[in-house]
View 1 (tube, rainbow, N blue to C red):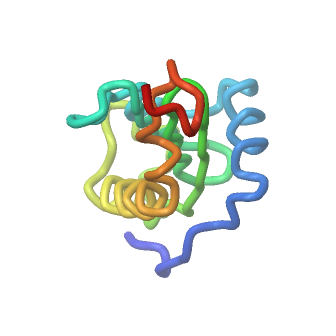
View 2: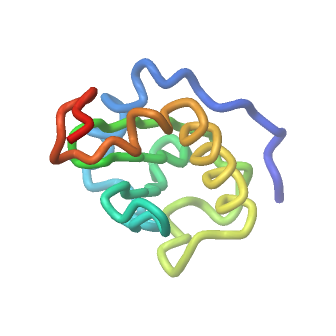
Length: 121
């Protein structure tokens, strides 16, 4: 069963909501710290919130971190019952959000975390 299509939720508080979700322990870790194929220091994590039925996407290079959230397109099965893997519709929603976040923050994410922004040595 599909929920109605919903846009990504505002990201201004997504990091705080993800932190609270992780602290509560009421989440499903779908993908954690997956390295980018081209920039291995850029990592992707996707978590499902059992309480809110949201998918959280985190992109980090170890120095800069960006978090976004989108409502899961699924109503059933519940998030708590998705512990054996991400559903195709959840994967589509999460990776679409990750791609938008990548486009928005690529210039910061590709900076090697071992160098300061603007260093060209």
